[in-house]
Image (cartoon, rainbow, N blue to C red; front, side, top):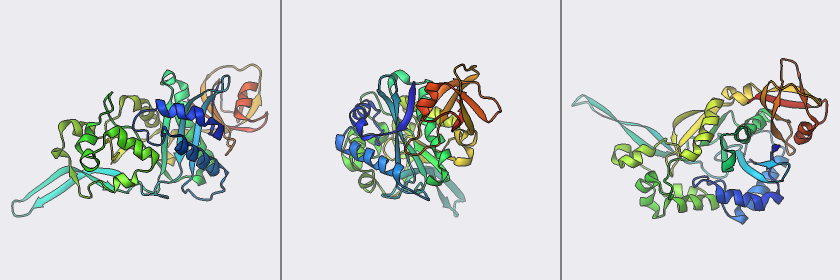
Length: 338
């Protein structure tokens, strides 16, 4: 059985292996021992902090195989963007010019550097082993974060965003970066993303052009990357799209990948999850597959299980399910259909 739980310092060696295997563009999962150690300690402190409103807290989760102790994935929630440093995006909207003398008004699509998305809760750092892509465990790794938000809404903003990794070739080339960022940094795309993971996006973003970039002046290959999802990022996109997330007018400053946005009131795993009393049962009639979590903080746990969940306020769980969730007979569990 796989369980999602908060990261621990003892996870560092396995977490670094996950970082080595992660997709280029997932800057929140750097392949650097010191940086990963800082992220783990920051997450541990965030779970222990008593907060009344969202701030710079970062909640880091790992997906563990209980039988082997092997980590097979990880994901994160940043409570609020823009607390410690500005959160930069590219706004993709028409730039309108007008000539009254000629009675002509013309709109040209343009990209403008902005900080419009400061103050949003950010989902990031999604990575799962290749062998578990497109499985229920992928849903668990992504959606259990939303169930955590449902359990602790005061820790998060009223709206949630995520940046999906944009297109790059198998050899790590990004046409969008080559057409835009390359001119200002003289760095290959993979190296720019690596530096952002080790330090921050701010120092690179501040060197980006402050004036609008007119899209028609970019190469066709670069234009085709705007809002385009990397094939290996498609599952992360699809899971959240089913949750109610939608694309908006913002794209990533480095690879042009899309940004997804949803208000808490429109997210399926938040609005449709319900609390039930767990009852230990040795025999379970299977009616469907569900996500289950406790409503803990530092002891948060979530699993996927096949159950028969009706309209009652109870849910029958096998002893190993109760143990995985860290709850006992009669305690509460949060349930939502897979």
